[in-house]
Image 1 (cartoon, rainbow, N blue to C red):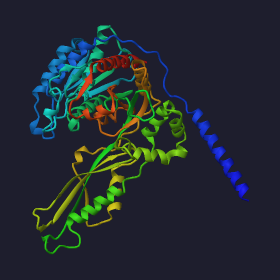
Image 2 (cartoon, rainbow, N blue to C red):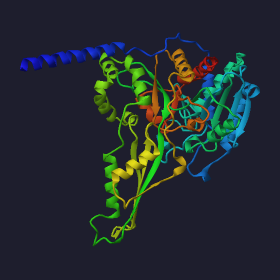
Image 3 (cartoon, helix red, strand yellow):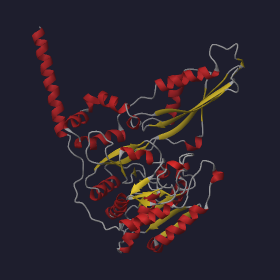
Image 4 (cartoon, rainbow, N blue to C red):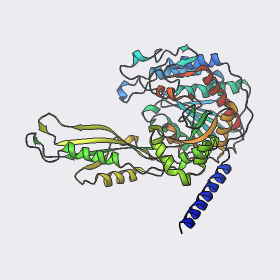
Length: 488
């Protein structure tokens, strides 16, 4: 009997191994095969213009009273002066004084237009960090082969890069078949309500529908994705939603010498502990699953076998993804306790206590399901569950198609300008202004070809923001090629 059992187990193992090997062999590359394209760009000249744009302190502050409009108007004047052909041949509209909408009319009205977007505002420099900058954050210095300063990564690099591409094509007498819109908002860092939201509303009023939209969001990673030696160009197919929940409770107060079994703070702390111990379910699906479909075939054999057989190795992969904050955020709705308020004096029991918790919502979940999860997990009717700062709430975006023209054009253009890069879809865990165009377009992609190593990630919204001159020249080349490839 034991011999039969062992024989059965042996056959099962052999059969399982055969299935794994067959699926691994069938896990073929999804990379489009193209020839590299040479696009002429004067790297130093374009670098100087980006550097000059950085010197305009177009800062978005949470407190609207701190807003200064002059730097934005000065930047607009600089753009008009720097890109004369753009302003001669394209229709230009100023939206709410500080945002810009350009229209480059195509010759074939039967072709749906497409839209390239970015934003001119930047985040402030964190208090106390100015001394840590290698070069001043608004100096726009070009040193050590890099352009330094706020906006070099987020997001003047895209705004000026797109304009460089269009200016160069106009100089080459290029005439588009497909209409192109360029949209540059001025308040993305604080929600985009007066920039891209207004631009989107204007286009919608005109009945515009778009073939695809390209915004910021993802990058060309180098050494960040495990198991892949080549750089990986991650193209965001969707972005997570955003909701902030406030938990509050009212106690009886009194003197601390005669405390109840649980104070207001204690009860809320228990609720927070439960939420952190019981996050919303993790899952590999949507853009994250697509990333492994595209990147997996390019990995070493062992990892290739794992991702070709997620039906078998899913628990192992989930365990690995949960270990790093960056990958954990791609597989679940995250729970982040960010503010706790209570108490007035050390010997006085608090009457009121509140805590604010920010959730970034995975596609497939929703604001409604987050609220239901919170109420179920805390399981305390004495704790009030309400929304906080609702003006920033967004549901997860729809997931754009990898089979649509827009993705194929972006993928091809990346491979032509960055031939060593693997292209893979991904999920944007933050938020972008592209959400303001969801009603105009089914297929929105989030990507700027900034090369990013692990040590560079902290530069985004951080200290010593900079981009390499050679990388920026390639970004200008990419936008030129993307516009050319979008004409059919």
